[in-house]
Image (tube, rainbow, N blue to C red; front, side):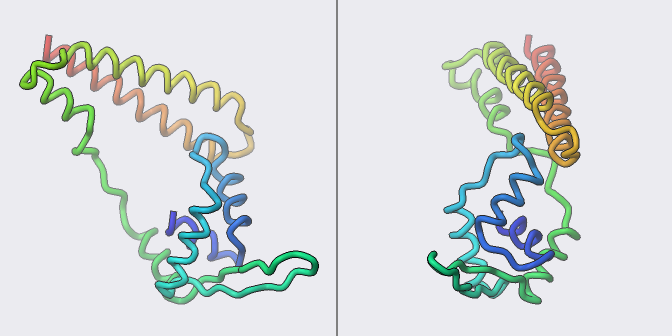
Length: 168
């Protein structure tokens, strides 16, 4: 969340609720909606670490609002984030750990675990398909997010099939 907020602040100063709305508009319903409280806590931490500066702005008839702007250190952090690659593949996978330990524990059948996980992935794909159909077609970022999630799920389903073949 912290780097996403910094990246949004590269455009112009903003207050927390504006940043929440910007994230929701950009990512659409497919991405978990940010909690405004979490955003303000994160903004406070970013300010304490010197990556942003806050300024209270007076509003007539309403409490002051605090707007935040990016510092040079914040801009450097965003540049470094864009330069860094995401860590993949997922080697520490909770399901795989369950699958590996099921035979040793004697408490779960590996094939039953695979079937249960497969059902979960298929339900999630169905939900994402419905979400894609309901999502604004002009929001390319949201559509790409949904498509990426579905492609990952399909790869996971293929991998489950491979696991089942090896373990039967």
